[in-house]
Length: 286
Image 1 (cartoon, rainbow, N blue to C red):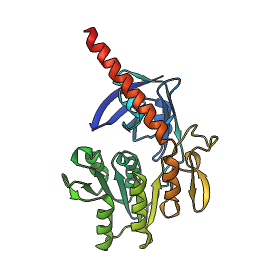
Image 2: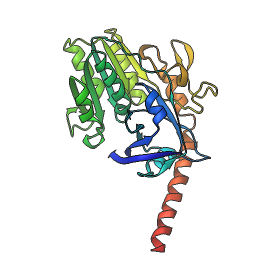
Image 3: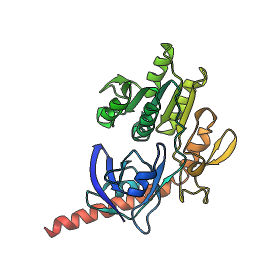
Image 4: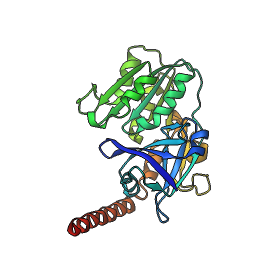
């Protein structure tokens, strides 16, 4: 059992959880993840480690409540316990002094980009961050990014804050302005990562994406997380999660991620119904 030391919503349906996990905190590196299970019959969900604190022996994860398990996880509060937290898993980010390194986070993808941005800065890179959200309230970790990056650009789809447009448009502006860019890390929804890859393909800028496919065991045994990279099958949990963006077959990846869409919707609807029934029962007992 893993104790939750703190829990707070930092955006609509997005919660930051600090979890007591000293062994993972000591070993984790940028780009790695954990797999969490909330109950004996619960599914296993991969979540990137956003940060760690060696003094208190904790790791930080940021969870967007979309499906049944992530909403169930976000219902946890400080002092609650999580059944399983396994990690660190996956290969760490490849960090070196590239020169000018741009970290791009779309929505909750910013939480995944953040630890790598920290590592890139420590390696001596000039770091730029482009973070985006649907609107101002969905922009996360702006202050944290400003502490570790030389420049931070915020974009919103509706123009309610920062640059009016997508992260890809801001990246293209920088490239068109002849800004030196030696490395790009892009993390977010598959369409966004694919769009970033297309923006950087022609100017031949080294670009890496972090993939988050369906995953079960996290050790390469089940094959559920397989993806196609450079026309070869890879297992994201052990071969990644980061890959050359210009070699990823995004179409196949997106199609595989929709495999259990109807089952996920059914599970979410059942969970929401049970939650509403529990709330009504509790209200009637008062």
